[in-house]
Image 1 (tube, rainbow, N blue to C red):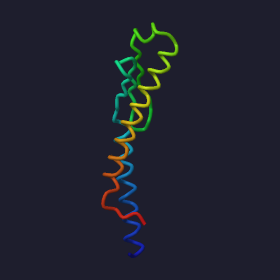
Image 2 (cartoon, one colour; image 1 turned 90 degrees about the vertical axis):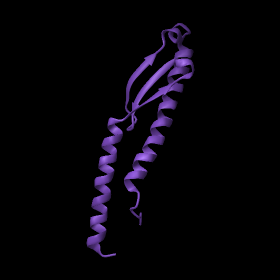
Image 3 (cartoon, rainbow, N blue to C red; image 1 turned 120 degrees about the vertical axis):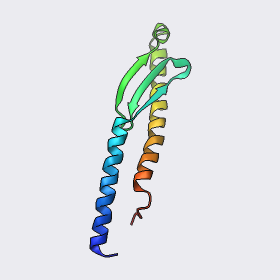
Image 4 (cartoon, rainbow, N blue to C red; image 1 turned 60 degrees about the vertical axis):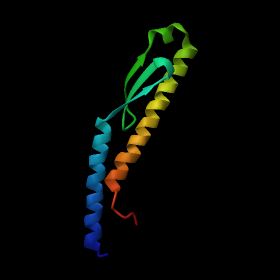
Amino acid sequence: MDMEALMAQAAELQNKVAVAQDQLAKTVVKGIAPNGACIVDMTGKYDVIKLTINPDTLANGVDAVESAVMAAYMDAKHKADTMIDQVMGDATAGIPML
């Protein structure tokens, strides 16, 4: 492969990754704790943009709130990870990694 073709391929990959990253920044996933105790809205770039805690959870004390927030966050992160794998995989599909 000549240098010009390699540079073109690198530029194409860079553009596709930039588009994918923009898509991830604009896409929101929802992480939900068991029984809806807490909901975390997170972008595909792991930015938490909203946190909703069920009032019943608040009434159960600090430990219940901490557990609910952690469970909702982990659910959102798992969903974001899955989305990132898909979006970035699509962006780099067909481009051999040297």
